[in-house]
Image 1: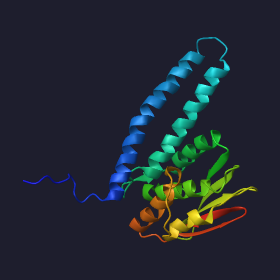
Image 2: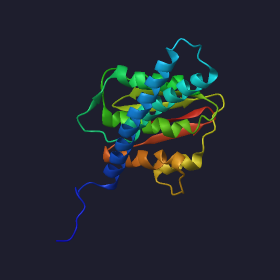
Image 3: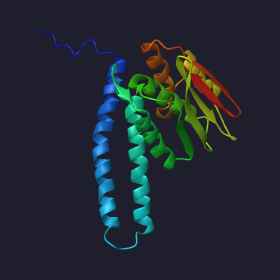
Length: 204
């Protein structure tokens, strides 16, 4: 009998999301363990030095980013919901360890699939704010609007055009520009975007 891939119906996007979920799941535990170890060291009574403070900040930053990536790149079940406090908490942790402020202005629970789109949109808009700024998620009619604002925004229109299907070679740091339109299409959502000297907006 010829060999067949398990779950042959699983498409490339599903496999990508499964890989993302697996990586984030396997990383979150050791990062948490490092954080616990650092906390125990800080309780020894000695004054924490700059080395311990650096490790503490790095662990917090890694933990916040992995949680964010788990939603943005991981698999999202159709029936899964994320609470407002949970999402705001994740973005608050991210803001504390970043030059960017992430604001969640969506009341109540939200489908994880839609939060995934919002997070991918934030990752795209992050690239327009190399010197810091504010990213905000807002309800917009029956959909969502993600905005980016900064006094020193530097959006790359050529890269954002990928959201409309433009072809260009993407680096790993820009993979979100390929994933966002594919995920939006899977969910039957239409993307609208604009960028300017003050930032940009992605709506779906």
